[in-house]
Figure 1 (tube, rainbow, N blue to C red):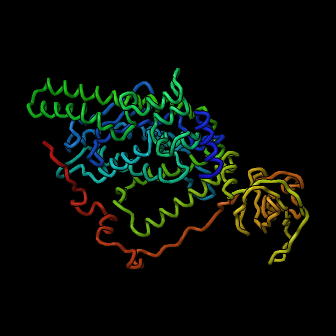
Figure 2 (cartoon, rainbow, N blue to C red):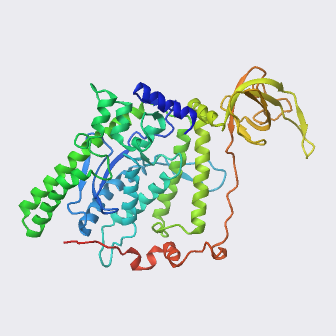
Figure 3 (cartoon, rainbow, N blue to C red):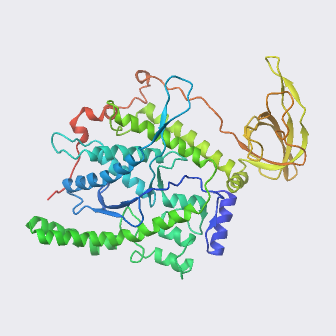
Length: 510
């Protein structure tokens, strides 16, 4: 945690009110997100219990598994949930437009992309487990499932994988969105409790933050936002309700079964409704935060990912994602995630002065006044071209921890401005950073007015993530034996090759 973040949390604790960490909301927020509140069964990893889902606040759909250990009921639930999710995804594929291109083929992209909101990171884990459970299922042969089940599994896995990438907005935990913008007086772990973080940001009318936090910690007033329910609820209410459902089903009493189903739905619905209301209240709060300038371009990339995966799913070569990545696939994924994180952090700092101040406190950026400038400096390149290379010296009180030759960008200069650190010298409590301007000055030997900072002007700089070539990995047949994996990796590369790849233990279905 940086000094600025720590001070913000201390201020929130002292004032007993959440403090903004950013000036902007750095995630795109769809006009019509699909809100999903999942519940899983305690003690049964990846076993869905219920979900409340809808793209409309006032018309939630509640789906409940009467007996989560029963395979047929579990996949009937997945099929029904899948139809809702797939209908929402299809609604994002109604309009497609061509992109500018100089080639003969004109690429196109959907004008919309799905956005699914869950309460917390546990909700993403629940969807990941459901996707893994569904995507290898077969629609023919022994134990067939409805066609929507494997389709749901593949789309959920795609969305969960994109959620790992910094800056994407197709699958988001609401607690993460709130925590990015507001600092509270509690720990990061406590911020994963939706009711608790909302108590700090927007307590209910007539309640103080302390009173709202006390209610948030009381499962009888604010049931957990999932994916797990409270043990007290499980033992006192849920377990007896499931036993009544099982007894009615075993006895074949249709009236008793209908009553048991209704009681179970009412019971779980009362657990999910408070979270449902909190989710939409949080969405309303986030809509009031202005969106960052570069959030729209990041969502353009989301639309590209969505279009590419949608086209792949419609191709004859489409297959479910493997159980695990091989060595090369994992390395590519790690490289992609690292690159996305560097770009996202740089774009946030470029857009948002609060984020920039946070990075300045860590020594990852600096700001100050120009104390010396050489605006007319010109150098001769190796190709015997004379190019402008002005130099300026910035006096800053920030703890500069950037090495020489670090490439820089500046949110306080015109677009396209590029620079590089020449040297950093201590000057008492300050630092003198000599910077050479390398781009954004025009094509002439004389820089355009305003493209080179003048003496006395205040500027800010941060590292440029810049372009870097994609890493080169060996061919599959040339992977060192230390990274080649075993038979399980080859099975993961082709999960449909063996019927046993889809086998699982179902427990006691009776």
